[in-house]
Length: 107
Image 1 (spheres, rainbow, N blue to C red):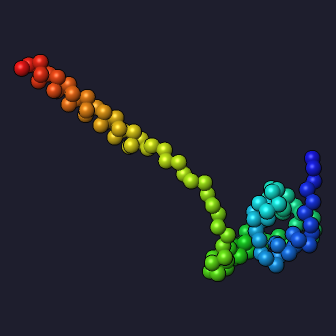
Image 2: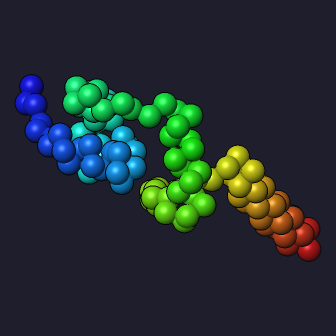
Image 3: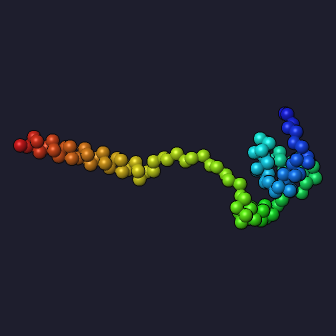
């Protein structure tokens, strides 16, 4: 397994001074969150508790500096109601066709 080098000073600066999250750092370095947390601990950096991280996020939200997470677009999948409506429309069309056919035969 290849060990990716992450500069100690750079990691400390981003995590402590710029208050980047482990998730943001993991994306920056293209590694897992576990790797970032392990390196922080290895370098003697005290990691934030979930409560501390929540405070950090709330502070960033108030300052409108919360990182934007871009989610992939949702592909619309038909719901059962939608499928039932399609089936019902087809059924009604078939019923009207059969009615017209019967009326045409009886004339």
